[in-house]
Image (cartoon, rainbow, N blue to C red; front, side, top):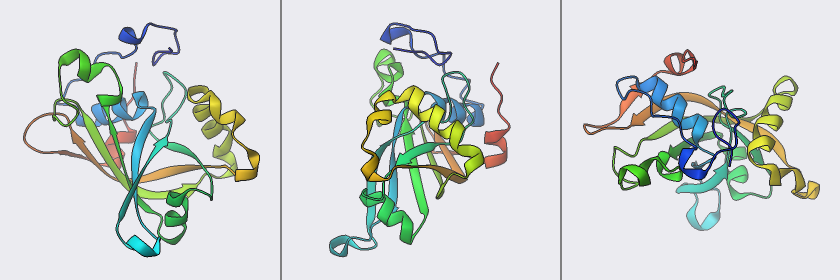
Length: 189
């Protein structure tokens, strides 16, 4: 497996230490960067459940290991139910949790525990423009190499979540609110 800096490591050594919980913007960026997938919630267009919440697990990346941008990128196909939902209403909410890493297991935290940090990002999902396509493609394909072989007949395209709201749940007492400006101003050493 590859760690956040792009080095091959055993699974137990993959995750750098969690940033200080007092720095919610840094925790949010950390979770976004180390998570390879999340649950994207949209509003369903399926007649049986029209207007109901619809969540789907999607692979994602905010950049190559060690070079995260904070922007969650996706590789999507019009054949996916979520994409049909987004074509009618681009608003979505993405949840990512450190439960998918070794962090919570090593600490003995249940995935639902606030100590098993997770974030909730809301905004709109849009196709990336030509300027951003190369970065999105590299970011996703380096973390999800299988994507390179997915059938072209499915008309895959690169998309991103344009973040407007951020909630960080990493301790007791409810979520911490982070502004997009605070989130994008985080730099990593």
